[in-house]
Image (cartoon, rainbow, N blue to C red; front, side):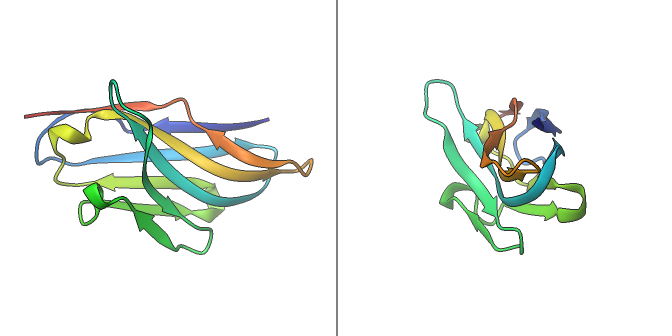
Amino acid sequence: QVQLLESGGGLVQAGESLRLSCAASGIIFNVYNMGWYRQAPGKQRELVATISKRGDTDAADPVKGRFTISRDNAMNTVYLQMNSLKPEDTAVYYCNADIRTSFGERRDYWGQGTQVTVSS
C-alpha cells in the first residue's frame, strides 16, 4: 500500500559528499515526520536526523554541522545531504516516515536501506 524508495548511496572517500533521497508512494493521505536512521555492522540502528511536516529538524550529535535533512512535501520526499563524510559514517541508511493512508491507518514505514561506505 505504501512504499519508501531510497536512492543515492555509494562508495566515497573521506571528506566527500553524498545526497540520499527517499520517496514515499502509494495510497497516502498525509505524511507526518520523516527521518533517516543508520545501522553499522555489529551496531544497533541509530537516529541520524528527523524533519517535521512544517520543516522543524533535529540531528544526532555526530552529524550536526555535516548532514542536512530536508523534504519536499508535494513530492512526499525526504533528502539527506551528507558533507565531510567520515569512515565512521559507513552504514546502511534507512528512511522512515510516519504516514496515514487513504484508508485511515497511520503507522511508521521503513525503506529497504541504502549502503553508504566511506573509505579513509
